[in-house]
Image (cartoon, rainbow, N blue to C red; front, side):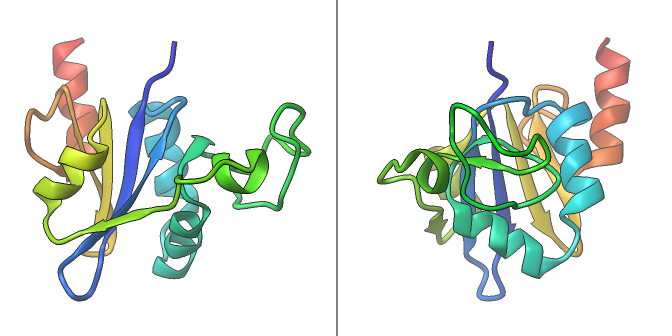
Length: 140
C-alpha cells in the first residue's frame, strides 16, 4: 500500500512549487531522504524539474526503465522514466492552494533553509521534521 506525499519548495516570490510522490512518504523514508540528500535549493529545484515521482531516492539519477530501474539510488519519475504527460511540477500562489492541488498523507515543504512537514501527527500545520518525529512518537 502506498504512503503518498507531496514535496514542495517556497519560491523567492512567495509562491510554491511542488510535486507528487507515490511511495514511502513517511518520515523515516522520504523525510529522511530529503533531510540527508536534498538540502540545497539547486538540488531541490532539480527534483522539482523531474515532476511527479513514483519513488524518491537519494540521487536524481538519469533516465531509466520504469519497470526495471538501473539504480535503486535514483529517483523513479513518471515523466522521465515512464514517458507520462501532465506530471510536471505545479506552482501556486499560496500554500493552501498547493495543498488543495497536491496534499497527501505527508506534505514536505522546504523553506527557511530546512524541511518542514504536515502529516497526521502535526494536524494542519507545518513543523520541522524533528518536531514531527517527536509528535509522531507521542501518538505511537
